Structure formats: structure tokens, C-alpha cells
Image 1: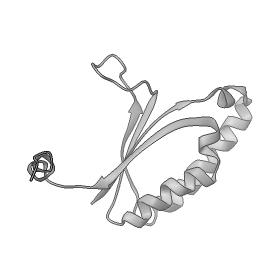
Image 2 (image 1 turned 60 degrees about the horizontal axis):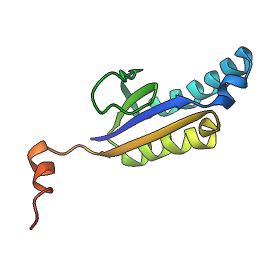
Image 3 (image 1 turned 90 degrees about the horizontal axis):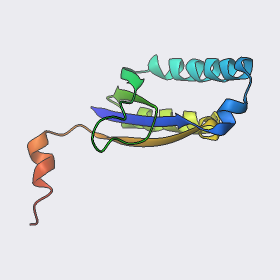
Image 4 (image 1 turned 180 degrees about the vertical axis):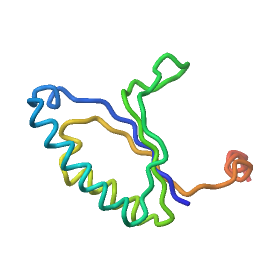
Length: 111
């Protein structure tokens, strides 16, 4: 299983758009993402980031996606980029293949 975590916040360019333009942009994104979801991309969770937690990142929103197909995860990220998402939102992506925690932590040890 491959996972993608997105965290993002609105840029001032988003705030300058009218409500109608914002809605049209979001509708376009949802259409593109919906097509990818039909081919196996799964939204696991999305929400608002709690910035009161210790060491929290200063972003507003998050989404967590999964797919058996790593290429589909990459296609999703490219779809957002190509749609102009990064014009309106600061975003960080974290993606990777799911691995058991003991194996991940073992990589911290010098060999």
C-alpha cells in the first residue's frame, strides 16, 4: 500500500478570488480527483490541522490518501500541480510505501 499525506494552507492569491471563482476552481479539482478515485485512489481522511499540538506544523488543512498503485499517487500529485493548485495553496506532500514500524525504526541504527 502506498500513502500520500498532504498538508496545505491558503495563499493570498486564493483570498483575492471571488467566491464564484473559488467554487469553480474547487469543482474542477473535485472532478479531476473523482476520476482518479474511480481508478483506485482512496481518500482515507481529511480535516483541519490542530496547531495547538506540540511541534505542530503551521498549516490549515490535511488529507490522507492511499492506493495500491504508486503511479496513481504520483498522478494525483501531478494532477493538482497541473490544475494550478499551487498557485493558490502552499502545500507539502509526504508519500511512501507502508512498512512495519520495527523495520522503519531499524533504519535509524548505524550498520
